[in-house]
Length: 460
Image (cartoon, rainbow, N blue to C red; front, side, top):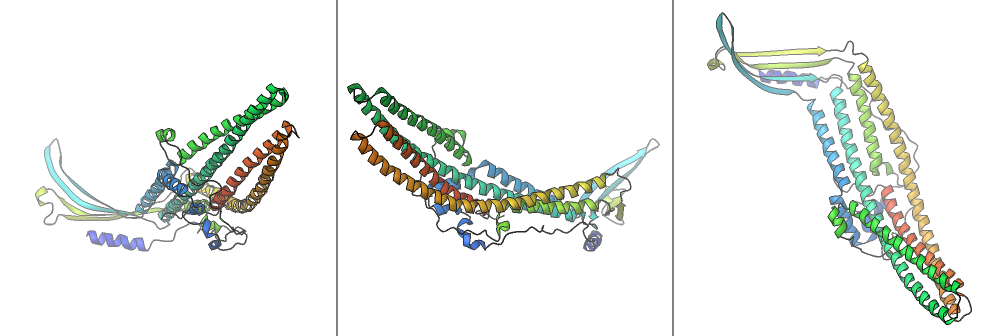
């Protein structure tokens, strides 16, 4: 009997009707022409940061991928969405349950009689209008959206680690420059103090030299504070505990000048950018889910049809429950159609349609932002390299100017003001050069991020 009931339910399942609601179609957006991403493969690999050829950076990136709390939270959200998919699938399957009961009933006139029942019941709601299929589609799309969101977190995390690391190496270089400059300024103060005492210079010259030294000292202290702040920010990205944040320093690898800079970056956008960017994928999956929700909402206008089958045994004596003619069965169907819901179903449909329009606007904006960021990153990569070349030429020229001016000042041909002006310009040029080098490296990082590099690092 149970087999017959399950067979009948299976037949109903196979003949279930089509799902109501619109089928998903990707929005038509005017996109620029591009070339295959293979030409940009160096920027789109799983471990894209290896292009810088710094083993210490490699270790930091792996540590962040293992211990960062934002990434762990994103991975947990994927597990939540996967569970939601399983719940949605369960609604499409028959429900099978077993029951047993035994008791005695009667009234004040007599002791009554005993009754015992045991059986198996099967229930199934026919998905004639595709309500549960649409809900399953929506749950699946949200799972894929959560996976894309996780990949966005991973990509952003690895880019932030690289950028903070390069900022730290820049500050290391600038502190080295300031410390060397401070030593030179302290020597100037010593020389001009002796000259002032001997009557060979004015107090104004001495005070100017002292002020210049104090200015460098203040810059040194400011950069030291920035260095500490960058180190703690990087510690958070790496998932270090508060104790590790205080007791452990961030390791250093190659210097700014030693870090590899990728040559010959193509100037064209990849044609498959929409498939590579995880944020675009997330936005589209949310749009697919919203589209499926419209179908689920429209299905509420139609009757819910459910089938119930029961097969088992019933007897007045427990000892004869499973013998003789105690077998019983029941097969029933039920249809429940809405008549008056106070406008609830109509409001649910309006809401689903509004959510779709919202997600459509979000998807379109995400695509626009993706191309903007990619275009800006390509432009910045080229321009930042030109800026570095200009600052490099300026620094070399200022270094030569300082050497000549120092000789003139030592010979008494010019005053201290002229020398200090050249020294300040040289310091500014050296600081700008280190910043430009860091910007060159960050431009490569931002390009990798804009092109969706690394988001296929792990299997979904």
